[in-house]
Image 1 (cartoon, rainbow, N blue to C red):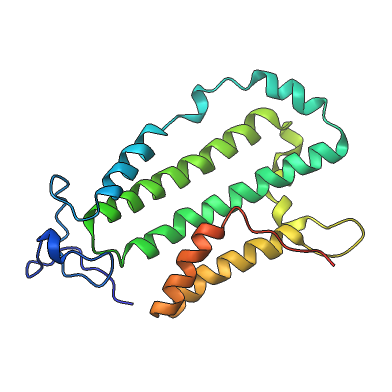
Image 2 (image 1 turned 180 degrees about the vertical axis):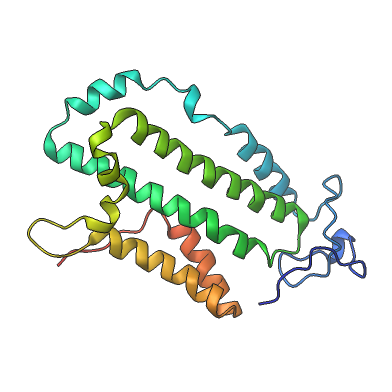
Length: 198
């Protein structure tokens, strides 16, 4: 899969010839004349979703967390750990996907996704650092690594993380079109992946 050059003076900004991939663009952002108008609308919607974690009052969550049953607390910790890990990996992976996008309006959406994945990670860390007692925070960050399903020695969260990260890494190590689109599909599967436990 070819990586889009930073600047291609021989490229064309003609919207009729613009392609999502494999195009010949200069990489200049001309958002007043786009081929994929849905991307500009999507970008604007993404920007409206912007928020800062520290501006959300989660004081009540500290009390609520203390009142959870052990099973509920384990589920809460596991979800936070999993989401923190996955959005960390997303922040590293999306630039690899973005590098082959040749439509500037879609590249803009990908840049915003990178920013929002990092912000999601920050929000999960804000919850961990505010809600979780200080003596348990490291356990929550490492929950994805050490979680065992009951007495079974299955590392459910670790296996999920390795599966998704493995699909991403396969493209990085071998940037073929097939591996690219599998990595792109994994990007959509990221948070919704479920594994059946035997």
